[in-house]
Amino acid sequence: MKISFVGAGSMAEAIISGMTQKKLIDHKNIYVTNRTDDVKLSTLKEKYKIQTTYSMKNLLEQTDIVFLAVKPKDAKDALLAIRPYLHSTTLVISVLAGISISYIESMLNSPIIRAMPNTSAAVGKSATAIAYNNKVSNEQLNITINLLSSIGKTTIVEEEKLDAITGLSGSGPAYIYYIAEAMEQSAQEIGLEKTEAKKLIIQTLLGAAEMLELSGKSPADLRKSVTSPGGTTEAGIRVLDNSHVKEAFIHCIKEATTQSKRLAQINSKK
Ligand SMILES: NC(=O)C1=CN([C@@H]2O[C@H](COP(=O)(O)OP(=O)(O)OC[C@H]3O[C@@H](n4cnc5c(N)ncnc54)[C@H](OP(=O)(O)O)[C@@H]3O)[C@@H](O)[C@H]2O)C=CC1
Ligand SMILES: O=C(O)[C@@H]1CCC=N1
Image (cartoon, rainbow, N blue to C red; front, side, top):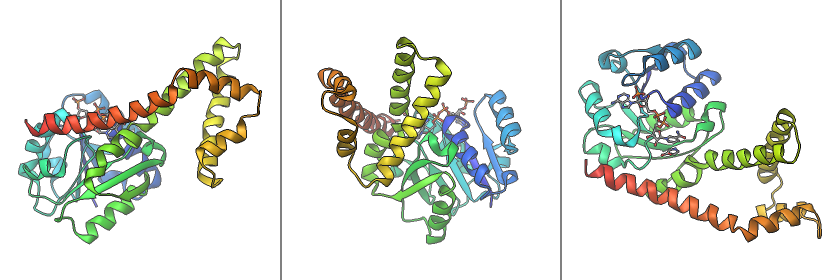
């Protein structure tokens, strides 16, 4: 099987990294291109032993799957560039935030899967959601689900949910990194050494995620079990509550979701 990536940025690299580690597909059959950044292409070629090219013909001839991984604003250009080289059955998987299946259908007569992964794909831990059009065969759907299993967990959803999923889990890793940044900064201010703090923060995040997955308890119950009356956690959380941090996070996720919808509107007019 040959897989081609149009776009060689953070998301394409995260998917390529996950796929090549799991060896589900031979790295020699993974092709990638971008617009101008040849240094990035050389780095990807060196790091993952994949093929790079600036020829669309080379990229797309006899390919089974094309991953579209350009910024939403570049969708039209990329779709126009690939169109002449696609067979009617070539599967197009778009990871673009806010670009609808119908927008892609307006330019391509192809089987289309719209996917929303996240950059944790690089370590096989993406939360990916997919929706697809009626040209996707059962075989293509099964191949895609199998392929995406190499970068994490995949669920099939109705396309309408993808804006919300983009706001929640597509952007989600960034929210957690934001918390990690704050933890790192505070660690220095309370007198901890950077490397020791880093280890403690990572283990704390991993442990909390695993508790959420394995304990069967709700986040609220898990939080209660950390919070002794009159203790340190209570004192800390009081500051978060007084600063309305939970409301800010809820607002953040709603705003990211709205932005996904805005992107759809902006791009549908292009
Ligand atoms: N980053 C993330 O966490 C996630 C991103 N996504 C989606 O993935 C997509 C890519 O995001 P991300 O990787 O962060 O973006 P980047 O800016 O890192 O990468 C975009 C890539 O697209 C290339 N490109 C632009 N136009 C063309 C074109 N016409 N033909 C070929 N290549 C082109 C750029 O090349 P060059 O540098 O040479 O211009 C660059 O390699 C976005 O649509 C985003 O919504 C989805 C989920 C998570
Ligand atoms: O910020 C973005 O637009 C992309 C989509 C989801 C995560 N990153």
